Amino acid sequence: MARPSFMYRLGIGLAQRALPLAARFDKKLARGLDARRGVTQRLAAWAKSERDAGRPLVWVHAPSVGEGLQAKPVLEALRAEAPSWQLAYTFFSPSAERLARTLPADVADYLPLDRPDDVAAVLDALKPTALVFSKLDVWPELTLAAARRGVKLGLISATVAPTSSRLRWPTRGWAEPAYRALDRIGTISEEDGRRLEQLGARRSALEVTGDTRYDSVAERAERFDRTRDPFARLAIAPAGTFTIVAGSTWPSDEAVVLPAFVDLVAQVPSARLVLAPHEPNPDHLAGITQLAAKLGLPRPVRLSQVEHTAPAPVIVVDRVGILADLYALADVAFVGGGYHRAGLHSVLEPAVFGVPVAVGPHWHMSRDAALLLERGGAVALATDGRHALHSQWLVWHHDPATRKKAGDAGKKLVREGRGAAERTTELVKKLVSG
Image 1: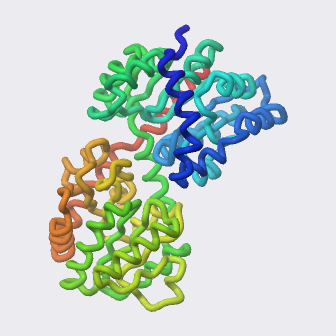
Image 2: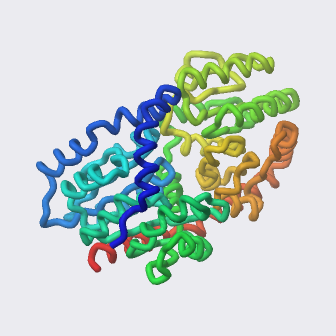
Image 3: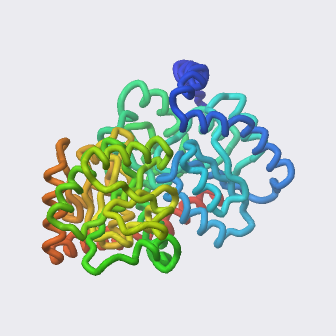
């Protein structure tokens, strides 16, 4: 069985040494580095007291929130259909901590760094029957060490963007043995399967199962209760209010959205902007307030203060975990990340509620955005998007039929994508039993 290349191990070693320095300038990185200390000991302690070697254990890894949402319906189905199995869940990004606490896993924690000693310690402790990765991140050290121990390896909701750096040197060479070791791969589409073959995956391991996020967002939408706080407070608005929800925005997104809203509210005084920043930390919230003041907008009201203040045209969401439900209150949506290199947030979350979407120019890594644009459920803006966004909002405000047609296209897309969770769960069950 292959082992990771010398260059990969060297790269991981150099990254390990550089992380403490980089963490001084990145709060999110620092948080993740601090939380990862002692993770192998924590997982070993759980295994010592709770691991039953006579029962299968499925270890699911999802790097961040998006991949976690893809894993969520599968974990829920496994818990319901195979209650005797034990489930472990790991993640990489600190943003996934909150989601991890809500999943039906017996143990959930950070993924240790991909180093031989850490990998061996966790595999010795958990003794997984199967190791399943969500979307694309397949860590070579962990994957190949698990394969050498006879652990079954899977990849679910697998997708590779045509422009992905993984298809190029050096990443492609580093990861190829790990992708080749996978036993079963459930891809989102046939095109993704062909690109996975370029990464090293065996054709015999591939099958199209779809994207489980469609099931995840649909089921969440069905459970939405607008009488809950804070949605009930936001739902109380004057008749004719035109509500825009701008979700998971970065400062580069807000530099387009807020000026466009200034133009809109001059013509549509009933317009209201609910702005949910990607990271609602004090610095980001202060930056939004400063930009609003510079543009001549009234001081934004934070969501936590809505019931204590007079209505305001701009409401800033100062908590996490509610964005997907906030879209239910929107007439139209702006999905953040399209003016930032970090990647576009989920366009399915507004689409499931029949809400038309606007995105920035960097949407090409998102398959969902491409499908939504193709069907007319979304519009893409140029780099200088202020005036185009203002114009599109005016069209959607003045022409409800056009707005509904775009929204219906999104709802139809989500409806057609359902069923992936059931197919993917079957793939994981075959992985364990086979």
